[in-house]
Amino acid sequence: MNHPAAVPTASRENVLEGLADIVGARHVLSDPNDTEPFYEDWLHRTKGDALCVCQPADTAEVAAVVAFCAARGLPVFPQAGNTSSCGGSVPLPASGGVLLSVRRLNRVERVDPQNNAIIAGAGCVLADLKAAAAAEGRLFPLTLSSEGSCQIGGNVSTNAGGTAVLRYGTMRDLVLGLEVVLADGRIWDGLRTLRKDNTGYDMKALFVGSEGTLGIVTRVALKLFPLPTLQATALVAVASADDAAALLRHCHGELGSSLDAFELLSASQLDIVCRHVPGNRNPLPGHPWYVLVDLQSAERSQDLTARLEAAIAGALEDGIVADAVVAQSGAQIEDIWRLRHSVSESNRRHGLNFTHDVGVPIAQIPEFLHRADAAVAEAFAQAEVFCVSHMGDGNVHYTVTFAHDTAEPAALGARVTGMVHDIAMSLGGTFGAEHGVGQRYRASLRRYKSPVELDLFRSMKSALDPNGILNPGKVL
Ligand SMILES: Cc1cc2nc3c(=O)[nH]c(=O)nc-3n(C[C@H](O)[C@H](O)[C@H](O)COP(=O)(O)OP(=O)(O)OC[C@H]3O[C@@H](n4cnc5c(N)ncnc54)[C@H](O)[C@@H]3O)c2cc1C
Image (cartoon, rainbow, N blue to C red):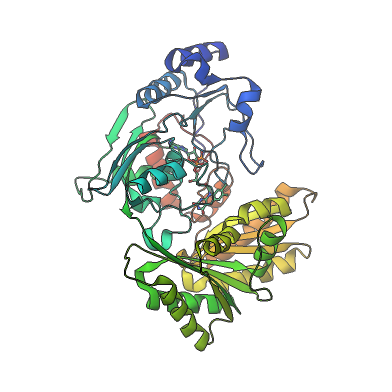
């Protein structure tokens, strides 16, 4: 179901003037040279348009902007770092709305080591927030390749995942409290740092992952953890995805809670990471699958590298592992991690990609790969397939690639995606494990969610945004 925003009643000039009165004229951008980067996603796939980009400085200004738009029936498109992978962060074409950027709400307000909590504005860049926590001897564990650009409000609104979910959970597990501007401009102050609070419905859980369709996140309280002082990393070659699944079970048993990341890469994926991004090298060529295993610990007494080596030696003896390199220095750890963090860049350079963000129960990952590979090979002889998986979370980024100049990419993408999503869903999975729905996966939402769940979604949307002004055209 669409929730079209009410028909805008204000002229463009009136809107720009009214918003300038709230945030200051220089924080309302309307020149195409200034607005272009806000209206297009980083993949150059989804492009939209708005009356202007409005950049409030604080919660009061966000509330005033939203109230202004609500009074005139203007759609509001919230944006943080604009690294969304599913077209969630850009306005619709000819939207007639206002892009509300939270990037000026970028302050880390308080690091509280005693309470293991941090409070920051929604526009705080993830890497800056992590650095502020680290300066106080604390870890904020969310780890994404986009962390130099994405911002906390976006991370909350997408319920971001990344490479450390295996140990620390997704953003939903890391949020203690939120401050949110509602669709009518009122402010909900839920910015608590309590670990326990069973007094009524968990409102913050509703806003996490709602992709800007239920409210605008302005400030965030997050959990912190002891800062790890030790790290050990290995690149492990395995003969099959089944062996990778067996290695994951082995690592859980041998390494317990120090297991931080378990990332599966196909040989095809690693090949193009080395081909397109300078400085990358596969130290173990000639195998079909690779796993990046990472351990971290705040306990100084441990020899993590020795523990990792022992665990891998056991797996070699059991015949699960074909070969492995364990990093012996910080530089070697970085070299191994660079392979993983180069995936998005290399894929973008390589061709016309249809990347999927499916999730299946961990034990079903090999079956998913087997079925998807067979289906793609049968339907698209000219396609290449790359796979990188947060395997410890059951999350697979399954990319089907064609030549850059392939004809009718939209129709082709719909076919490929329908096929990949059908297979994931048939295995009890999801079509969107961590990136969300945005614009790109709305058809899948309608296709796979039950009528009851869709009804519940619509009820929540109507309750919180009855006029449909918040991020219309996304999710529902
Ligand atoms: C190289 C690369 C690697 C990535 N790796 C991962 C990964 O491993 N795991 C993962 O989960 N994601 C990953 N992503 C996707 C992306 O970085 C995340 O979804 C991130 O959380 C988006 O944050 P952002 O600040 O860029 O939000 P945006 O892209 O600006 O917005 C994302 C969504 O949130 C809404 N929104 C933004 N700010 C607010 C707000 N203050 N209030 C309400 N709604 C808001 C937007 O409307 C949009 O729907 C990756 C992206 C890139 C480019």
